Length: 342
Image (cartoon, rainbow, N blue to C red; front, side, top):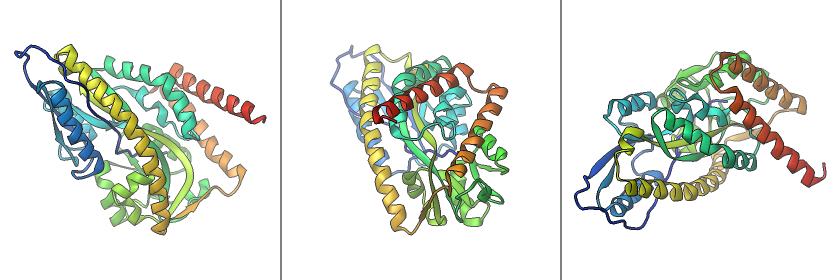
């Protein structure tokens, strides 16, 4: 349900292109929550150098890591004001400018990465186009993994949520709606405030991928992981369209290709990292628990269906896009059942 994403994005190199020496240099200021020294920031710095080389110095990337430019809402405001030229965002953060970008995060809509890959191969392009209509060039949509419920007491049944102090990211309409249907009043906080809230007891339950929980040290404040993939998380590396359109066409291509190539590699690394992180959580002493019965699993899915009906009524997301996503998932599942002979 809840969203937290970090580690979305991407980059890498490209060949040298020769443009007129008079083409003006441009520094693109990019904000991210990824901390300095993290593997992701190291990659970004390396690729930033390669992009500078690939554009003959006409395009440089200047990074502001660790949330020093503020939370996602603040960064978006600064991009619109021209103080920044882009950033690495969660899909939930970008939903305030283009709600459909958050559709992959519908609670319990995906059960496996195979389903995710099937849908993304068919829908990413239209989501990228939708962002561009709202003034943002998405150089890549990146894999954030599945979020799991992590808590200080076991959550095997919907009823176990009673009395839980559950975090959701600011502005996360999807998770808030689902939790309220489950009888929980969630605590809305920015990503930067979650660790302190866990320390002080303001919250006792979060939703996060294993790798993200470890990177942000949330795993030190929880004891249980409910082993049901609640929601798929996606990130995006975006540039202000007004800024991007002023770059030389060849330099635009350098950025697009570099980011796309790196996104593929980093997505693969992210999934392997998630597998390793799950092992690390077990070794840390976190207990993995599951729903007690098939009926209880259906109860979770029932909340999801009810939440989706409420979201449709609010008309936050495109009904056509929701229908499209659900058809694709069902088509994949039918195909998988046929292959198994079910």
